[in-house]
Image (cartoon, rainbow, N blue to C red; front, side, top):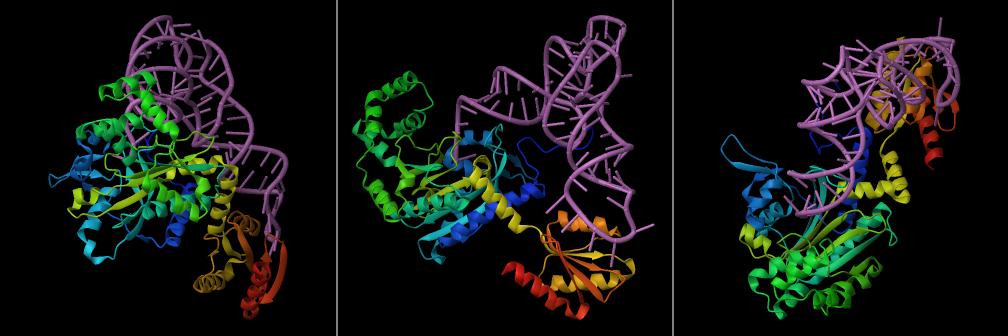
Amino acid sequence: MAKGFDTLPGFRDFYPESCAVRNAIFDTWRSVAQRYGFVEYDGPVLEPTGLYTRKSGAEIVNQLFCFTDKGEREVALRPELTPTLARLAAARQREYKKPLRWFSIGQFFRYEKQQKGRTREFYQFNCDILGETSPAADAELIALSIDVMRAFGFDETHFRIRLSDRRVWTDFAARAGVGEASVGDFLQIIDKLDRDKPEVSAEKLAALGIALEDVQAFIAAGDPQSESLGIVRADLAARGLERFVEIDLGIVRGLAYYTGAVFEVFDIGKGMRAVAGGGRYDKLVELIGGVDMAAAGFAMGDVVIGDLIRETPATAARLDAAVAAQSGLDLFIIVADETKRPEALRMVQELRDTGFRVASPIAPAKVGKQFQMAEEQRAHIAVVIGAEYPLVTLKNLPLRLETICRREDFDAELTRLLGGAVG
RNA sequence: GUGGCCGUAGCUCAGUGGUAGAGUCCCAGAUUGUGGCUCUGGUUGUCGCGGGUUCGAUCCCCGUCGGUCACCCCA
């Protein structure tokens, strides 16, 4: 690597092996979302910087890939999809019946120092329900996230949904006499409860007139008597999914825009960062697009889920199987006699037109070498075209069984071979 | 932004104050019409970069860049 260019820090190359893994993850995301009747959308990768600073404050710029374009516009590579979604939904909200059930798979960028589970570029699966205030929408999203995990092969021994509701804490703050302006600070303290030392948390809470013991007791009680949480839990219980969910009032999520239920997906035993997270954000569409529309959603990145899949034997095997199913050849045409190459090419073309996955050596090679190629590309059947043409040889590579037939009988013979193998 | 560890062949890594090795991968042959094995042969390194100490540095020292893990943050 003396010369040339490396990938930028935190960016990844996707060679065929890892690209196949990535696509298998995408396939799972997409199929589960579609199973829930969600429709796919996407937006620009580059947006006005203001779209992101508007809701979160200017300090967010530090973690943005942003620059001034040739038209003197301040632009940023998207760090998340929700603001874009809010704009889209607001702009054409009259064209779609509510509630909207939308999902997206796209690439995002955050200028952060990379570490395990976090890169500067990543793919994210976003699912949102807009125009529905009922907690049933939150439950639907949580169920979707659970089913995505199950589709990867995880079960209740591998992960848990930690569910909370910000209103539980905003009510708590109101009862404690915390001013409107300080509620955000209060939520930040709760969010950091597990990470900060108790003395630090106690000191911060004292500034708001709250005792740490009261907060701890409230969390320990575990049953916040929240109407919306009760509905969500009952909904999930009716689906038979309650075993995946636990109430954890320590979940607040860092984002300022959440207004109600919030949840995160955590692995059990590996101690990774959250696999997915989301919640209700009923004011954001109004803020971005000027249209009052309730909304809730969650996102799952490809990095943490990818790590978790690879580090869990059952899901790793499942992923490998999915990748294998997407690759490989039906047929490999061996050109044993170069003078018959035109006949071989004709056959390759016809088989491809039929829809088979077919490859053949581009350059002349020894027959043994060609069989190796067929093997490496995991072809099911090798076809030898040689001097004896129009007699052709078909060989089932996994079974090492060889048959010979005339060219005009090839289709029938192939059907017979595939039929026997496929069942 | 802060700190720990790391940086030697495409990959995984050994190694020594006297300008470097193994395995693997890749390529070719054994095997000029039959495949995952085996055997043989072969290519590649400015030992991350810059400076310092030294007769001499891949090795010691400083800096820097990159990687990794943790903290901060996490949309």
